[in-house]
Image 1: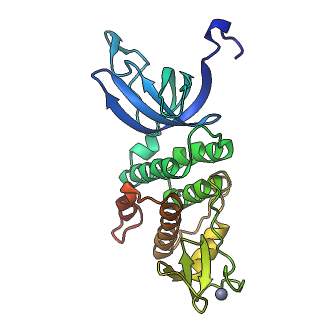
Image 2: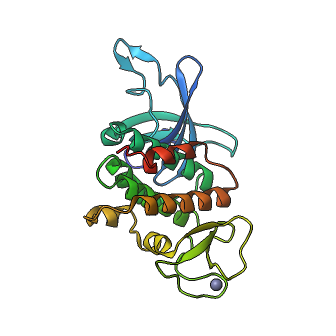
Image 3: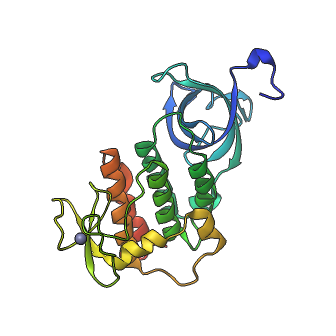
Length: 269
Ligand SMILES: [Zn+2]
């Protein structure tokens, strides 16, 4: 790497969002990062909770979930190994998200979705470039739409873009104002007269069409819709995306309860 001593050639530099933090020993952390170039990385942050001298932490500060920073690390040697984080320069602590509980919860579900669907050390730069501005804007006026847009971006990055505009069986176009079945196993929509699986979610066709047209975070933030979205429709869209992610990853999301905080009937925003 440019500017690096060749003796330090095994060091890598990247930008990353912290998805999970586990305290390890009295002074360290094990962090799971979503790095722009390296993808998912599990690193030991040695001494990250230790004061190197009075008032100064070894890595600047302990690392928090959802924070974004520049990292220098020694990559893991094997699949089950941890790499070593040697530097963390905080770029964005996501202050807007941390001021709103629903936004913070949605950030937590997003972390879990990424860890559930992406596998280690594969670059997903497009997703990273949608995610970084998307997370930074959670807590603002588009929080619910952004959450849906980020969840959709994660599915697309993982190769599970849901098919929402035509019935997967008979190709009939979905129309607003009529019920359809979303089939998580098939990753798309079926009209109610076509054979469906046992586990389907019945929604209005308009919800799926709106979800299909929902822009990814950068485009959404560049031209935010001025109309507030229909709350039950957004909740239905969230249910569809979460079912798609849980089915594709074959695991339940622990933080899915947080959807109630974000989309619940009680007004929480
Ligand atoms: Zn059909």
